[in-house]
Length: 426
Image (cartoon, rainbow, N blue to C red; front, side, top):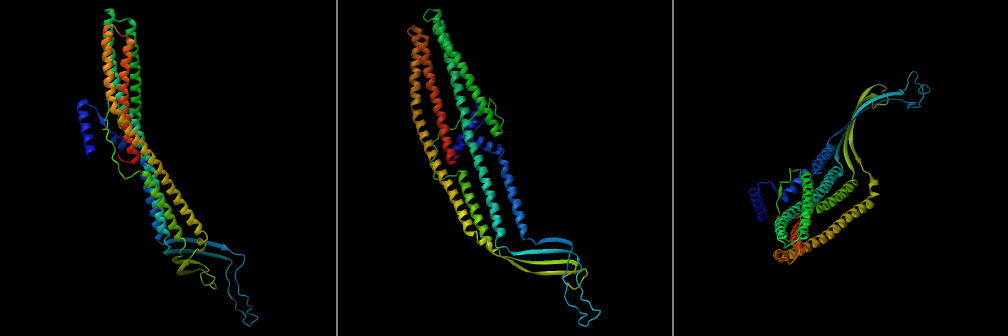
């Protein structure tokens, strides 16, 4: 809460002071997530899950099937009894026609499926979670790109500001040395030495501005925000991240989802070991009906209860369970590897933060001394005791010290936010 308040105050002050649009890195994270094309796939995955679950739920409904047939048979069943030989003259045992017809409507209602539908629904849900977790991992990776771009812009801003201060110092010294040249204290080569660095400063500004504009364009595309050259990026405070045992990386949710998916496969395999119980009914109309001695069209129906049990599922049970256990072990191995590499990254970021904090402690003192040397050189050239080249050496040395501090400050911030990325502690 304290950090959020500090950021809000900084944004408000900057907006009042500069009359510019200001954005924070937290806003960039949020907008980049909303703008990233992959975010729409989350909704599609959820809809797919709902459709699949709805289809599976229909497995509990009675299943109806209509069928019809017309056949011609080369032979039909006959009773091999000669009634005339037995004294029954004029009596015939009827037999079926070789052409037969029929229509029927079959109804089947599952009473117990051994948990097949339930386990299939679990599999659909777990597969959906795996897909969504994969998407979240990809979305989270965008934050690392935001870090690089955001702090690249802040570095360019600081370099542009410092370069303009350098240009002012060079312009002031050029004017002074120009007057010294007219008075015979300095010569044209002293003036040319300063002019060379003035031109270099102009070149450097082109580089810095181009780099900033490039980063701005990329950031605008990533976030979908309207960002231009006048947009001001709020510089975060260099606060050391708090140590926490909590580890909320989306990869961990992905590993959990993958394990749950394989466990749902285990339940699905187990459901195949049980028998299926159902009731059925068939109603039809055909020639013949159920009475084979009635060679005419007649209605009929059949109703009953049915038990099916696929014993063959036991054959592969052991190997299937071993395969699932192996898949779970592979996921756990990936989790272990991820935690191992992440712990190394965390240590590297912590050491980088410590390094830059220590370096920044000395930067101000180095700059103070370099500034003192530069001012002394400005006084010496006024007395004609040093050349313009010597003066420029000291001016550039001071400028390099300031640029080093700027770089250390941005590297510190980047290391802090890279640490936050590693730990998902934004």
